[in-house]
Amino acid sequence: MSASAPAATTGAAPGAVDGRRLRGDRTRRAVLDRAVHAASVEGLDGLTFGTLAASVPVNKSGIAGLFGSKEGLQLAVVAHARDVYRATVVLPAAEGEPGLARLWRTVLAWLTYSEERVFDGGCFFRAAATELDARTPGPVRDAVVAALRDWDAYLVRLATGAVERGELAEGTDVGQLVFTLDAVLDRADLASVLLADPDAYARARRAARGLLAAAGADPAALPADGLDG
Amino acid sequence: MSASAPAATTGAAPGAVDGRRLRGDRTRRAVLDRAVHAASVEGLDGLTFGTLAASVPVNKSGIAGLFGSKEGLQLAVVAHARDVYRATVVLPAAEGEPGLARLWRTVLAWLTYSEERVFDGGCFFRAAATELDARTPGPVRDAVVAALRDWDAYLVRLATGAVERGELAEGTDVGQLVFTLDAVLDRADLASVLLADPDAYARARRAARGLLAAAGADPAALPADGLDG
DNA sequence: CCTACCGATCGGTAGG
DNA sequence: CCTACCGATCGGTAGG
Image (tube, rainbow over all chains, first blue to last red; front, side):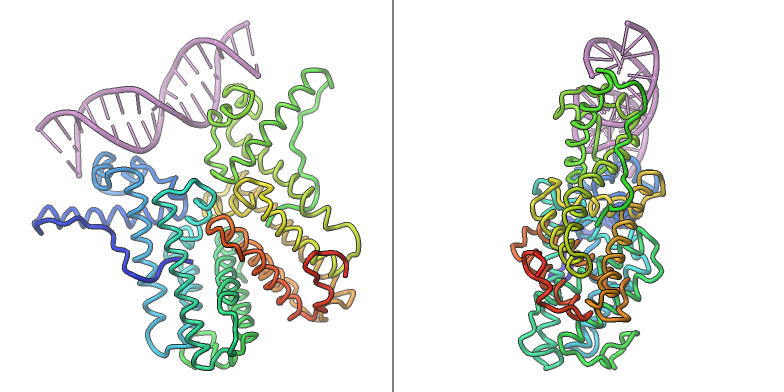
């Protein structure tokens, strides 16, 4: 689960493009690359300036200065995770045929993203969503909610396109389909990360194929490798 | 998701049953009742002796003494959560007709458990599983894994019973069915807690009914209220 | 199960 | 982005 739509930039400040700026942006990106992996394992709350500083060539106070506050760091991490997610899951699967083929490629791209551990701890957004779900609302929780909603809306858009092209049955409850489909993706990530279940991804593909077939998809249009079939 | 099988006791120590013991057990239970709610919201790592002491009539050092260490507290909280889960989800649904009816009652009991917020933050085990999934193995993570495995095995047992009674199709891939069914339960909990989605539980019931029907269940045997129909 | 206290780490700032 | 430092909170213990 995660982010898709309008570009959530990492939040670089304005200003003259001189040597310091460039160096600052590079440093910032290096810290965020580490931080998003760490957050996928230890949670957004588990991030600390101190432990982060130990694995990056910037010291504790340098990191605090770079992001202003812990909340500033967390917001930058969520935005960075969206950028990575968009580049690994959304965009590659959005090339080629639209409609059912694109939806199916997106499902497969998601499972690959999880299986290849693009984030050390599995899907960053599953971790962040569950960490913050019952917490008092605030900017970080809001950012995670927005990412989830955008991802859900994106899948609904893809499924609606498949219905319009006649590749899924007319009258399909697209919200219901996406609810169950995304549930299966999340469960595969959990089963793999927590239980090291070797069947997790095969199960998820099988379940997703079954859900789409029940909605009228031609099984031949749902190949295991995601190529337009 | 969670715990079912052999009683995970809260771990009372042996010793003469005198006034101090009894008072100690009552205190212990009062602390655990608070702690399990807090952990469902803030995570098992978010528990601290200090904040717990602020909401219970025992001070920080008293709690540390009661559980020996933070890890001891976390283990006791997991065991306590299993006790509560068994009493609210597993046992009530296990009365009456076995087979498909029992499986269906269990699904509905789970959704009620989530919706009624038996734990303040939604399903304790979903929170704990995702918090610890990518962490270094240790006793607490092991306890959470055991709870999840027991719950999964319990659902597989129920579904197998339904197959044996001819209420689900012969040859049903029971592991696959439970994988998807439990995915849907978890997603309902997340959608309700994180997004306050008013359709979450209706969607989950509909999805679960669809999965069982696809496995050959008579839809008339899957009433909305869980009574043997 | 309380008082009193420990060293370590937390988020953050002053000042350059 | 570094050195040096702050008050607060952490998990845990001594001693009763």
